[in-house]
Length: 270
Image (cartoon, rainbow, N blue to C red):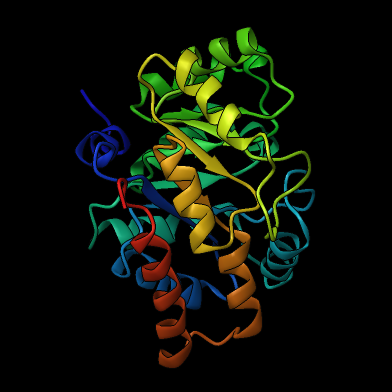
């Protein structure tokens, strides 16, 4: 049975790349995070990525680290983020994925956490510190419970290793565009077009989405025109929330305008 993520890609990838919008769960508060998530979906985000606050977010740069710390200091727990997903699932069919770290699954119990996430309507997980060589149990339990585990490749991942990662990944293959942590960049690296081409050549039909550093509409267009099936935008969204931590109507409208502008550049053959 196709997952909600696979269906979303299959329905649109010939026409455009999917826009995957990241926001930190429970930031700046649980209620505001829910309203921000609603706004991202209402503005056209094709997949919603909810970050689970964690004390040592090794893949995240200053923007997301700040949001994560803020949420943790306010008392946010992984279950609170899953509850946001569950509340959204009552109103939306949009795929929801979580971005979390392995320690949260391990400390909860891997299958227990996967079952909880699935029960709240989560469709997939990104776990940046989960090496695919050590992921077999997690992948098996995720498959058993109908959850996609989205694995990552970086610019230093060789062709054969990238092929093996793609073979194990489900939902899509996540390409880290640059060396370093998340965070808005003025320009994408010069090798990105070649990197996307390499990933597509070994992915055997699995969608390929690119994240880290993407902050501008023209970058979305460049990635889609280079063959990316999806584009992940995270820190640029968090930066806008950092400036306006109150989820009032004006701030949410500004955030929605940003999402609509990004999505307008996600169409192929422009």
